[in-house]
Image 1 (cartoon, rainbow, N blue to C red):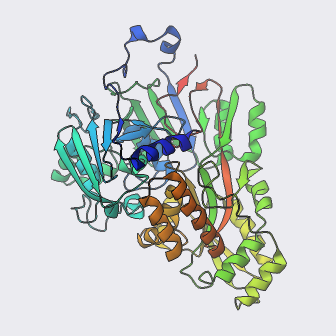
Image 2: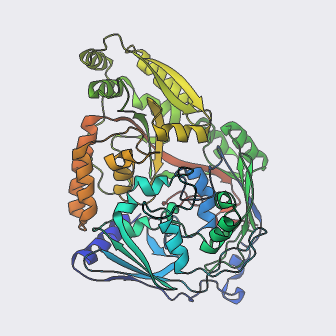
Image 3: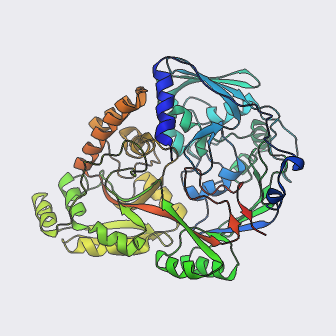
Amino acid sequence: MNNVFVKGLFFFLLLFGFFLKASENPNATLNPSKENISVEEQKRFGGVLVFARGADGSSMDPALVTDGESYVATGNIYDTLVQFKYGTTEIEPALATSWDISPDGLVYTFHLRKGVYFHQTKYWNKKVEFSAKDVLFSFERQMDKAKRYYSPGAKSYKYWEGMGMSHIIKSIEALDDYTIRFTLNGPEAPFLANLGMDFLSILSKDYADYLEQNNKKDELAKKPVGTGPFKFFLWNKDEKIILLKNQDYWGPKAYLDKVVVRTIPNSSTRALALRTGEIMLMTGPNLNEVEQLEKLPNIVVDRSPGLLASWLSLNTQKKYFNNPLVRLAINHAINVDDYIKVIYEGFAQKMVNPFPPTIWGYNYNIKPYEYDLKKAKELLKEAGYPNGFKTTIFTTSTRNPKGAVFIQASLAKIGIDVKIEVYEWGAYLKRTGLGEHEMAFAGWMADIADPDNFLYTLWSKQAASAIPTQNGSFYKSDAFSDLLIKAKRVSDQKEREALYLKAQEIIHKDAPYVPLAYPYSVVPHLSKVKGYKTTGVSVNRFFKVYLEK
């Protein structure tokens, strides 16, 4: 992935005072006629894909969620101003066809695509063209001082608040129906890439106003209307979601006629359904079953190093865990190499820093905490707990219950008695976001290939203050957070990298978490399923997927 080149070019242009201009001919072969499509490509059109995952999403409003399961649906229904080229970390035009950035990096002007229409469905049959008012609505509804669309306190914009977007954006203006201007409070190096993130998807203001007028505002999070390659048809919670091809899509039309997204909590049951052809593609396999699946003639297993990290959050606001000696003791008590063998069957790399080495700025000089029970016991004694203590760990029935047992057994060796508390996925996210846990598993897949997406979003003191938070350790280091703010304000990538290298040293010393793994992306599917990519930041997008006939 050439994310370093793309980022470096952007910052070079910005640093030397040029206007950065990305453009395209909005009418150029976006929807080629059948005469321009090869016979081979024409064979790709049609069919129904049945996709299965372990848990359902929590909302159809992408601004309200942070979990990848929700984005499986919303990422195919909605569009953003810019997007990531499928399978890569490269930015390309989407609902904005081009943009200009002022020499000081404070003003971004976007030229919007014309002739784009929101979906027409059985619950919204008006033909409405996308315009600047929809961008204003989609952003302003999340801003601190703006009128919130949902009832106060009813719902929160976790991503927006966690990333401090209200502090980043000074104003948003519609210059005309097809031109939108953002003015920032200060330079924000990742801003352009951030606009491709799911929580900044563009919703229809007309549809939202219609729901509000009819006292149905909550339906915005249940019955979505977007501009994406698929449109919503059905959601039976914890069972299935059905998406239909958008025949009027502004870009290249999807090959598939329909996508059925099924929820099958048990990994082995999903694998069995794949074997029998009941489903065609699945995520989250039992990794000890991968070898068996690969031997089957009709099944392929795609795997690749991902933009993923998985760790154990230690809530620094709770008794025991507010002591750095206790946190270090826990790190030295867990054999992460064995953890990866047991939990990931080797399909992961040992985690050392908060983000994976597939992203620039990774500090290779930092060494992992060594497994040393003697040292762990000494640290615990120094902290004032020679006989250990009692605590809890949060997990879910579908996500890493085996990992919780491993952690429980590991900490028992140094006298820490761990009780495992199991919650369903939605309740787990809510409780950890509010900080009810003492220890809890956490994971993150990059939204953009930039250290800021991990370090600031997940570990800054600003993120910890946004409740519900994505900073599950409630880590509030001033020294660490100050470096992240400085890195946002400079455009030169080498300068940013130096700041991030230092920030990683600080968090490693403070140990607010137990680094566990950089999991590989492992996706089994029927061999006839083509075009699905496990690389890049926009995963589980189905518009390029087709069924070989």
